Image (cartoon, rainbow, N blue to C red; front, side):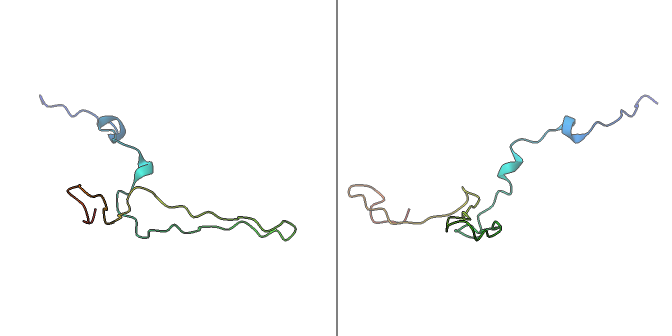
Length: 79
């Protein structure tokens, strides 16, 4: 027939994604403070030191505060 079926390429080439997968999922953080996922093995011979650090995905938290700026349109309002 006059309509010949062309072999489909992979979506990776036909319509590549836009943006980095490192910033997904795009949603609000479900806790404001990070959580410690793993502690290193305890070594009794070393002195007391920091063993873990709180980390969380930044950028999707919501902060509300009162603005205290006299003369501003938003003075004494939540921002």
